[in-house]
Length: 212
Figure 1: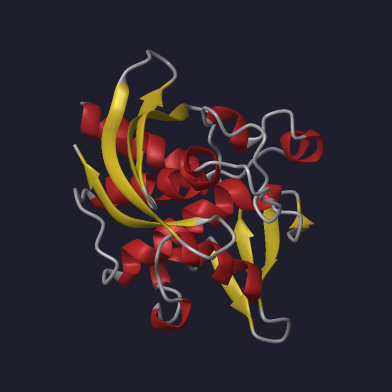
Figure 2 (figure 1 turned 135 degrees about the horizontal axis):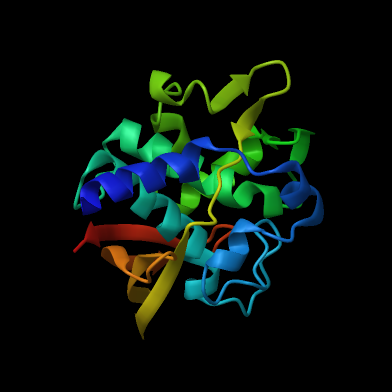
């Protein structure tokens, strides 16, 4: 039963577009459902933003992709998983990046340069990802003429991503948390992750991610 619930929830998060009013007003911004990241705007990260704030979008995105693929360990060589993680990150948080533009009420236009910035947070090489997988063709497309990606926005109003514990040792940060189903407060899944300081837009990259 819980597996069916997670499948339905992930489908609603990644397929259903945000409503026009939500996009226009930002009253139900996806960022509001992530604890401790309300002041974070991708593409405009101040130096004092910590790992929990800056990397919550990347961690949330990876967790959703792993749940969808029923995996327990993130494998960067799994290109389908990597692309889906990147799509999740862009679809749920790309609208808050000041370099993004709306094409219509539920589609974002993001330059390839912006997409590369998000890829770095996942500790992936954009050039090694290869072409977009067919499974994402209805949600993410590439336009060579403008060197940009069109991304259908996701809906994130049924669950809350939480970072519950954090430990910093030098340039390494170890985190744990969960995805919480808002209807009853239950955990849909728990994770543990390791971040490493990097010279990129987010300040860190995910070097390991496991589901408990």
